[in-house]
Image: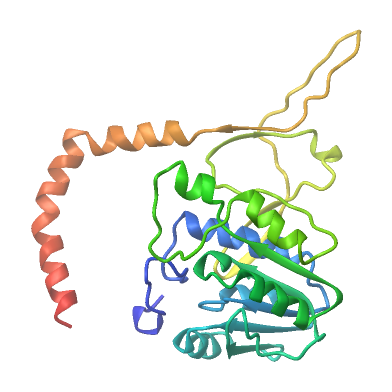
Length: 275
């Protein structure tokens, strides 16, 4: 993608010119939301660059992307032009749409960027039609920050899972919660013919797809007695990948290549800073 038309990457806001594990997390969430937006009126709060709102238009009747940053709204309006899509400047405590006019409000990774959580919930309830649906996500303070001793300078007020649940339960009669984490590893699930509600998604910033389950291996339990259920499980391979990457970084060939390319990187940075 031409950098001249890219929205500036701040290190926090997701833009389509940068691909990392954050992209996987966000794309997965939007693919999930699309299941519940068919033929409906949708508002995407904190839409950022606007790619997610654009995806939602493929199934929704009408989508309004809302962001507090005028630059982001201007960029999104220019990049994603669709007859059922509009971008507006606004914030979570003053959503620029009419009361009782929205079927679904989508808001991913928004709560942690402000401390007006109650105000946001009241505003979401105002714009939602009776029995309308809120689809929302936020990092878990316990695992995202506390256990890792990590401080995200862009975050104002993170919530633990209990605080997140309490906030939503205090404003909505019915709630349902799930957890998300990017992992690299091995998935074992019941036979694809009996899997039921399990879905496999894929794609990139230009398309999202529901993928067929194509197992490379078959696993079975067999007995003349009672056979236990195999169930679903996932082996986390993060450590294996980390060990592999560390072995590459510590290798002589990598260190030699890094040393030889250092002058080129410095020259490149100098040219970039003097454009």
